[in-house]
Length: 281
Ligand code: URA
Image (cartoon, rainbow, N blue to C red; front, side):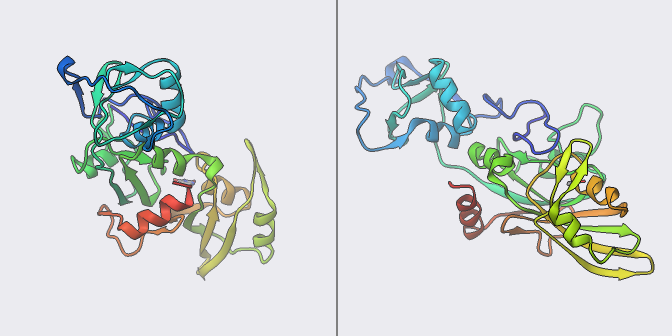
């Protein structure tokens, strides 16, 4: 299966809605509680609890509620915004109980060049899924790096976090180091900041600087908050600087640091806190 978070670049299958990776257990009829729900009571919003359990983004979960696919303690939910207690309530999707333990995890991977951003591949090419193995159930990659691009890729089993990090409306900044042929014109920074026209519309960078120039090659740093396919390569080619090597070094506040190629690390609680805050979670 090729799971992927809704993507800023090309999207693979799945992402929205139901995931085969979810841990599910049927609700035993004897377990059903007859508790009547008071919508004003304390608790967490149902769609938030569902999204955290990996059912889908909050928007997708709201659609599932709307479609009558969700039940709480055996009773179908008919209104949005119901509050539930994830420690005691039994929540089911299409009649199948979902596991509400908070086992959300987010990892950073230093993706090597040559590896495709997919959890599996029917053509047997090396994938991110091969590197991740069975680290945690339900992990999806957040966005995508080209096969030839290396560097920071986030993986998470938190559906809402994945959705928000990848969705263009949250404008999460990504930083890239690109090795380019040619010397960089003096006024390029201004041109990139004001926007360059590409086939599929204009693109403007948030920041740009030349890190190094040597023997007809330069290393430049580009920061942008959108992720159309091959965006950095296409942008730099358009201004006469073809890219020979591309590395993503940061996603918002998360930095690649000194991670070895192919290595994976769990984000610290502090990193996860700043990342979540950035996307309003
Ligand atoms: N821009 C690119 O051109 N490639 C990537 O992999 C990411 C951003």
